[in-house]
Image (cartoon, rainbow, N blue to C red):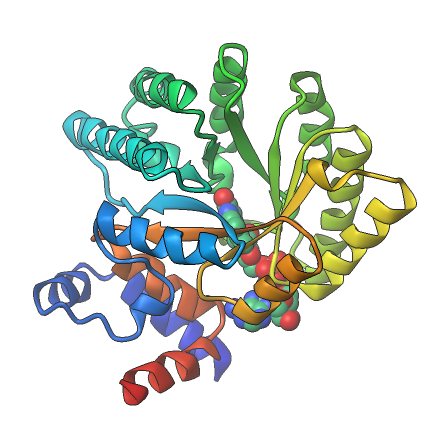
Length: 305
Ligand code: FDA
C-alpha cells in the first residue's frame, strides 16, 4: 500500500496538469506545513519565527523546469533578492539552491556565471550558500563547479550523498578545500550501478562519511531525521572532543519539529531547510511520497482549520 501511495504522489509531483490546477485554484492543501509561502516576505516571516525559537535556517527558492537562459537568470536574481532580504532583516539564515535552476542543463558556463553573481552579493552580505546535490548524472559537474567557486569564495558549500558508492572518495578528494559540507543519505532514484540498493549499506556509509569529515576537521552539517544517525554523530563528537562550532544538525521544515526543538534545548546547532516559492507543488508531493504517513498530518491540518 505504501509503495502504491509513493508512486501515486511521485506521479502527481511530475504531472503538469495537476501542477497547473493546484496553482490556478490556490489548492494549497496542507502544503504550508512544508513550504513557507510563495514570496520572499512570507519566507522572511517564517524564518523570523524559527529564529525566535533558536533555530537557524537555510532557505531554498523552489524552482523547477528551467529551460531557458532567461529563466535561469531570473532564478539567480531571485536568489540575490533572497540574500539581500536575509541581510536586510538580519536573519540567521543561509541560502540553498540547485544548479539546474541556475541553468546547468543549458551550459556549465551559464550556471557558473549565475553562481558568481549570487556569490559576489552573498560574500558582501556575509550569507553562506549551499549547492544542493541533485541526481547522480549531475554529481561530477556539481563538484567541479563547487571546486572552481571554492577557490574564490569562502561562503560556499555543497552536499555529499551516502547512497552513492563514490561518497567516501569524494570526501577524501574534497578535503584539500576544507569544505563545509552537508551530508545526506540521498533522495533520488538511482541505479544499483552507482548507489547502494540496501538501506543498511546507505546507513553504514552515512556513518562512515560523518566520521571521516568530522575527523578531517571540516565543518559538517548532518542533515537527517534519523535518530540513530543523530546519536551516532553525538557519540563521535564526544569521543573525539569535536567542538560544537564544527558541526550542526539539519532537518526539513515541518518534519520532526519537536525533535528539532529538543536538539536546540540540548545545546546543539539545528538548521531548518525552508523551501518557498510558487513552485511548491512538486516539492510538497515528493515529501508525501517520501513518507505517506505525512498525509495524515496534512489531513489533520486541513480538517483542523
Ligand atoms: P530515512 O529516510 O533513512 O529515515 C530514517 C528514520 O528517520 C525513519 O525511520 C524515521 O524514524 C525518521 N524519519 C525520516 N523521515 C521522517 C519524517 N518525514 N517524519 C518523521 N520521521 C522521519 N537529498 C539529496 O539528494 N540532495 C540534497 O541536496 C538534499 N538536501 C537535504 C537537506 C536537508 C536539510 C535534509 C534534512 C535532507 C536533504 N536531502 C537531500 C534529503 C535526504 O537525502 C534524505 O532523502 C531525507 O533526509 C530522508 O532521509 P533521512 O536521513 O532523514 O532518514
